[in-house]
Image 1 (cartoon, helix red, strand yellow):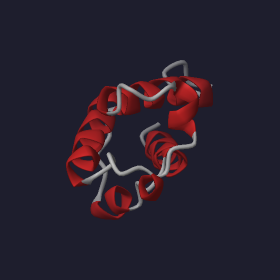
Image 2: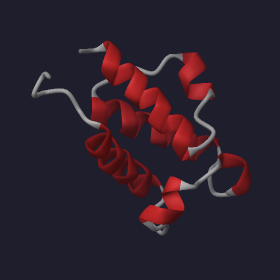
Image 3: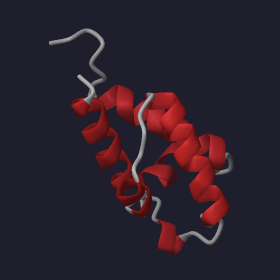
Image 4: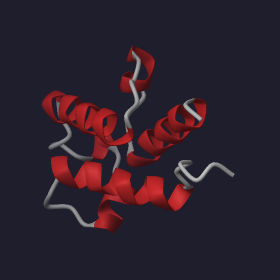
Length: 88
């Protein structure tokens, strides 16, 4: 296994940190079950901020389909896991 390969726990921890930078008033547990449709504060500006933070943290580029698919923490995690796996 590549020592630079982010494992699931590292991705989870770093992604929670990304979400906390955009939504600092939410706990880790709240973030892990967060869904855009259930959270009024997750508007278009928050989405843009979240994409920027995720791209910088994980050194990945999210295409339009990936950005549009970021509807929950779980969806964001799946995208990050997919993108980081491709970069290995």
